[in-house]
Image (cartoon, rainbow, N blue to C red):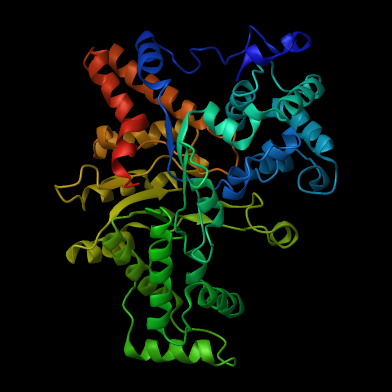
Length: 482
């Protein structure tokens, strides 16, 4: 799915001056060997993303490049607003072609933003386009991609197959029926599309109307009337069991920070009972302790099931109320938060470890100031039995660019063992984001190759190449129980 698919009238899409050569980001000879001989052809296990399973089940074909590439991409939306593009051409009512042209006009101005690398990589693979996107090339690129998107090789499954994706780990609410996952499983294809349990909405007891509405949904799918705390926990356990029956082996949680308190008193039990039954009870007195108690119960349940639990900590979400109200969440108005992380994270993991109930865990930070905090925290709770049990997760969100990836790899190496790392994930809503796995692999190989040539690592490409293969693929295959 590259240049050989281009028709004769689109050969001008190939530019010999592109930076995206076969040795892109590989700045030394050893890095080239590590990437081309050990990393390049490895399959992908994408254990955390936000791809819609219904589109995979239906093997959806996208009507045009805007639908595939721009809709839902808050990274691009954020850049376009910063470049003075009106919302009409971002999330508004202009046509798909007009939105693409607006993005194409902006694109040359994104140099040094990771969008510049990511976007050109996504055009090159799978579309075979090596010319730079700009106002002059936009029409040809748009028409060329739209033509290819109508072919079978560019359906959702075709794109995943192009990138050699073995496993897609979607992100799913406990109330989801997982019917699309069931449909995919019954299609008898090699690709695994497995759900991940993401219970964030159940923690939002501070907003009573939203919370009660969610509890009512949970009651319907679990078959349990939720009148007290034990009912809520049983309903959630029922959903964990249902997810497990449908192939789920991973949970995920997006939080500001880990709850500092997680024990529930008899008085709080009574207050919760009154809160869910009394329409006049406007607020719950200790929302963080409630969230902590529910999360602690869930984490113990994950351990019983043999799942992996993930914690994405630190973003300050929905800062712009105007855009939140007009567009909704994930509008591109989130940022890095400066919350204190270490003490509450340590206390929470320690409480589970003391009881022998700490599941395999991956910790992700969004604030780069916390790199060493998270990397060292992971080393506190390994058990001497499970290799790499507590993982320092890959550079996430604002940190999954070249500088952020290198800093995460360095912090992990300095404070732990890179050889046990489960590697990259997309955390994306776009089927084209699998280029980020290649991006990560090139950065990893360049980092290791540079240190070999400086005499900081053994000049043994087989030895270091084996570690590259582990980080890029094998460790993830062994770590996740699916």
